[in-house]
Length: 352
Ligand code: ASP
Image (cartoon, rainbow, N blue to C red; front, side):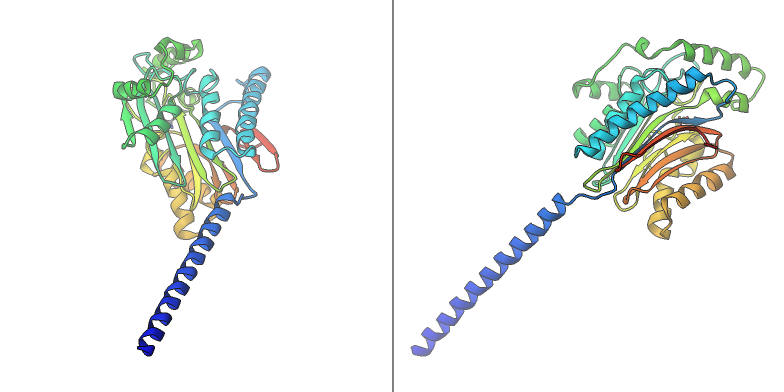
């Protein structure tokens, strides 16, 4: 009897000890999780682009030059402040792209280029580097801010890509601003389409002279204080596009990609070549599997792979440590960058 009592006592004590031990472990791992959640990385940062192309210095007046630079600076400062105040990379990317979409200077949202029927067809995509979730919309004509619609597809649907009138219905249901297609039209784009249609009769779909007025896109990549990456890209596509042509912008991995393990990338340029080279994902893959730096990976993909097939354009990127890339094989790409210290860079031409 005495022995049985002793045994019971030992059993109860060991059970209590196990209980206390596991409670402690649980507490520790919760504390660690909390610490990790609260920890902030030092090198947050943001990069934007307003499209790459063949831009001639001769055609760019002083006023135009400063208009572009001022807009880029205004936008990057807004995105930077969101990050500085503890906002997420997703918030910074969405807001920065909204501002670029609302500006008639760039080929996205207001100011988008026209297709061969003289209509607007907008594409956009977004990717969250933490969840690897993504959203895209294609060929829409009435959504004021396509990047916000792409984010809603990611957040509020089980799908990744919506097209045309379905995408527009979805955006309306989500409470996004819907506008008359006339909102997007600018005289500059109407004139460009006329000029291309005239030149088209004498030349092929792409020639060097026409490239400058065919291209454009806006994009933003950001790393926030929690170490989360995000990438967004929004465009009107290429002037005079036919047959509901779709470029790289809404294709996850081609014109846009983000992964917390590696980097966030947004592309601009001749979309067909960016699709064929799976540009944005390829840069991430070179970093993940080969250990390349973001600058090395972007150089290889843009200046070797895309260029070798005959394509042109550029990318902006930021990696998980805040290192950035702004790579192009064209003579220009509207671009700007701010790091966590508040240093700002705004550039247009390749040789700046
Ligand atoms: N990549 C876009 C497209 O092909 C155009 C551009 O970025 O200039 O639709």
